[in-house]
Length: 500
Image 1 (cartoon, rainbow, N blue to C red):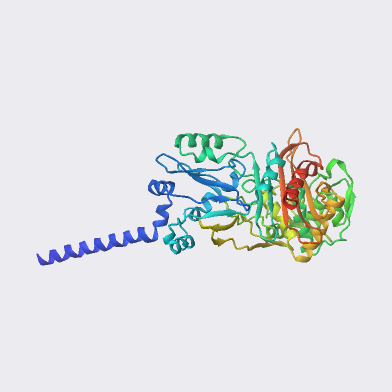
Image 2: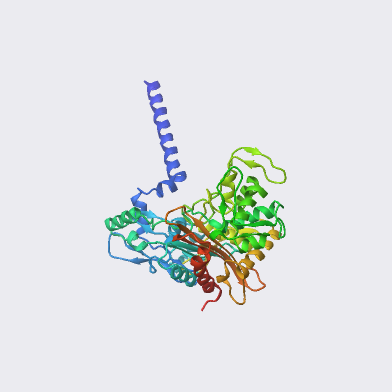
């Protein structure tokens, strides 16, 4: 009998110890995971019945705030500017979760970071709450300029400070009103989200950083970078032939210059005139795959940018062009897919980029070859205004050497002074640019209109880099980028550099 009692006691102790370990595992190590589960309605009710911090612009304009309401949920999240900042703030919904800044900085907005909780304790006797405000890098004036300039066109605008990675403006159209998704009336919010999900124009997705497009001739900056970095291209060599088209090895299909123009020359000239023939030949015969892949990946292709927003798309440059077919003297080896390689040199074929990525390409040129990590958060403030955290600027990529960046900086300035981006010229400022027209192969012809640019006070480091993409423009003229995207970029540059 005593032996049976001992065995029973041991079993009870083992069960107790196992339960103790499991409870500690749940409460200590898995608490955060359980707390963040969407089905955890207790956590949701807690968060929607306590204050939540504001999201504000660099100037202090409120982009998201919470209002006290009389319902089961004490607080209602509202967005005073509706669609203006929607693709940055995201939404915060009891039924549908959260996106954007609302999701990435949820711990700060709810006051659950150590720095905010410590600050709350330090002000214990002042009866202050712990939620934090997220201060954005975005400037409302520049964001409005992007929206107004884009108007009813489908596309996006990205503007950033190349020295820090601060996103100054990021606007995408079509967009949506986050108020309808964040409404506490659950069924209405679900219905609104369902309609937005079903819309062919995909308004919930930001064309600025969540969608990819052929970058067209704006990618020629990357091709030029590959040439300079490999030492196979300089300011004066090669001198590409002045022709109407270029036919790569292994194909009879020529790559034509826009409108049948005769085009060729050295680096500055072929950038100014945006010569398809020259850049296709540069990629296929002067360089070959390896320098092209290296330059694209150094600029950020094939890797998602480290932006503090949800689900950024990865821009793509192909990495497999097949086996070597021949090794002609004085030229790069010919690969099975050398015709495709030639197309990538002008931003076509399988090259796909977000507008954010192309803004970073321009920023790399502007910032001596260094691409800073893009971000939308500037700092976190406690409710009493004290700064408890700041974004630490950090490099993401070294896209080229400072010496080659200086060559391309001057080359892009020459595209504004003497080439296809002349619309960007601003007295008193050094402005560099590159236009692009990405043909979509449709009948009747359509193309994406692009422009990338940087600008700053004359003789000083550039303070802004911009990318504009207008989607599905009728026609395929080489002037489309400058004619359609150029005026949009100009208005954004003016808003950033000439505030008033």
